[in-house]
Length: 131
Image (cartoon, rainbow, N blue to C red):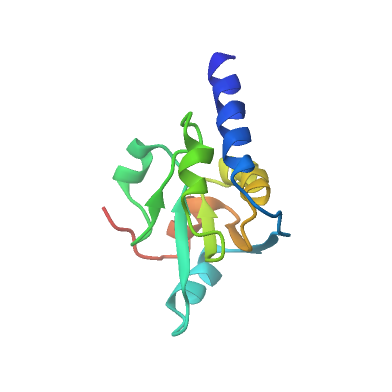
C-alpha cells in the first residue's frame, strides 16, 4: 500500500508539471507491424519498455529505453521523456503497458503506440532481440 501511495504522489507531482493538457492519441500494433513502423525511413519512434530491469536485461528491442512500470519513480522518469515524440510502449505480454497508458495520457503525450501482446508478440513475429 505504501508503494502504491508513493506512486500516486509521484504521478500527481509529474502531472502538475504539465502546463496544458493535450489529448493523447493511442494506437495499437502487433509485433510484426511494430517492426515495420520502427524500420520506416522517417520513423522517429522512441521505444519504452516498461518491464523490470531484470526482464529488460534478458532481451529487449534495440534502442529501447527501460522505465520500470512497477518502480516508485515510474511517472517521474516518464515525465522526463519528450511528450511530443511518438512512443511505442510494451511490457512482456501487454498487461503493464496497457495500465501505463493512463499515465501517458495524464502526462500529455501526443502519440502512443501500444504493442499488443508485448515483447512476447515481438519475439513470436521473429523480430531481432538485443541483449
